[in-house]
Image 1 (cartoon, helix red, strand yellow):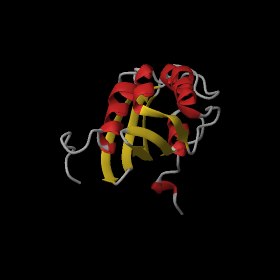
Image 2: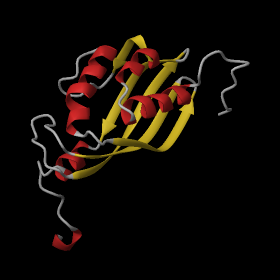
Image 3: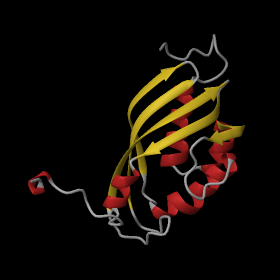
Image 4: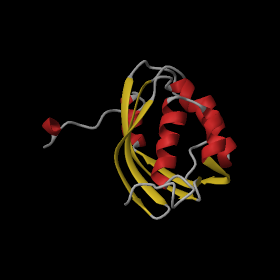
Length: 155
């Protein structure tokens, strides 16, 4: 995909929009940037339990659940493919469980959770998102579920 060229396109590329979300919102915890990045009619196609609709729902979930539970969270994009208005990113979220997370009290455990997100950006605005995370691994890392059996236990 060619690099964004402001002389030809007045809007940032979909990849640039999503990179800004990752840095400014997820890693720097600047929730007000969501209003600039996401369209007014933004839709989370697979909302997390308890996440209310739209960009206000996203801000509320981050402010009341995600950021308090993992205050040092860092999102790293491991791989990204962009085509047209879609951006597909494979990522890893790192953090330390310091607060309640969806009913699981703080454990102090460090986590590294992989996932994939499919975002759509139109005219420089984030329109919708579908986030798929390895929640089984997250729950195992938090101690809410037993770890997977090791290969040594196979019969």
